[in-house]
Image 1 (cartoon, rainbow, N blue to C red):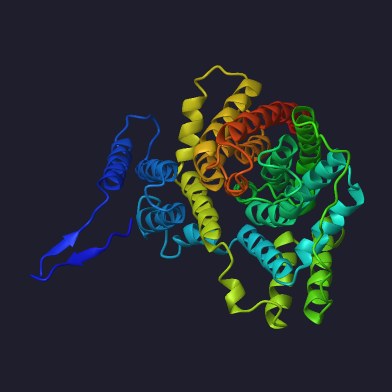
Image 2: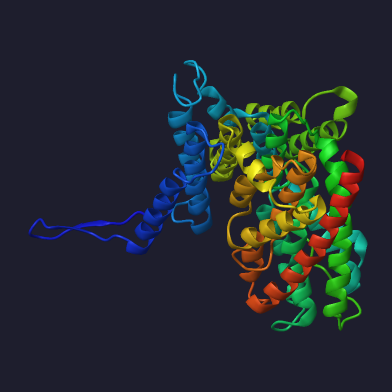
Length: 467
């Protein structure tokens, strides 16, 4: 929204304003203020204020009239000032405001920060590219097997790196391979589509895979449901595996390869250095500790401190590398956590649940509605912003176990991939000029529909287990 101020030779000041953006902000603020006065039974002064914050945040996240991270900061600031002041609507003592600031340094955020540090160190020292190449190489040179290798490698990497970084890395590895095809050859499209779709799907597999997972884990932790790293993988990895295989079968069926085989130009071997050895050992130890949490009892966030400490103390990463961290994503996740705290502490989430209780909708049908809304919104806005809005509400639904509704909604946000703007991996793939918007929309929607069916089946299984 930054606009230049111009001063002419006579000293007259001209400010160029984006009137459309200002109009959007004013409309959103008007709706937020109006929501405060809605005649909803059970609203207290605190829940009215929280409803106003929620409507403003939802409107700003959907329209992106201001950057999403700025909206998240707005949530933290307004919740702290309007709900957390001593003697305010929640009747807090002087230290009560801290519940709205705790998410900024919550275990989930530390875990996510550790994941970013791991990814940056792996990228800086070439470990990610070499490991990805090692993953793909065993699949041979037949196009269909190469495509399977691309999909599985992308899916696995996106569990531990950001979906965006994984997509950028895989597209870079595939660039020499894409030269085997003229223009927009059918199988070239298959490989380019496979990367962002597999990255979006793979992120579901771990808590650090994608921000919606972190939001869900934090909300559940606030409700007393601690989900360990391995617990999340037990739920997420089978879903990821099924969807990745279906994605492969879909792309093979639609884009049949014309060549029997082709050569892959893998990156040249890199020199093994002390720093690279430290990265490899620390990476492996960290992942191993995450996977064996039930055996040693160390929380995933505590384990995440290992790469943070090792890489900074031994100079594996420096202050310039820290600037590469997606700080806006961390702020966005923190804002979503604060919104969840505000909704719970003010009683707004319970009021919304009471209003929904008047709907005579079976729990299974309600899950379908929640999935559809999550995917629809996430196609037009940041997945993290969508999860910030929807996960706290899903966690409060009285119809099903909060673990089910929360996790399923988080998964749903990651399965929105129909447009170039739906997610950064889509935008990166689209920028290769190998696919069209129509193709991305068509096959992204098909993949999302398959994902909806898989999520409904998973909902049924989880309802049978958790009730």
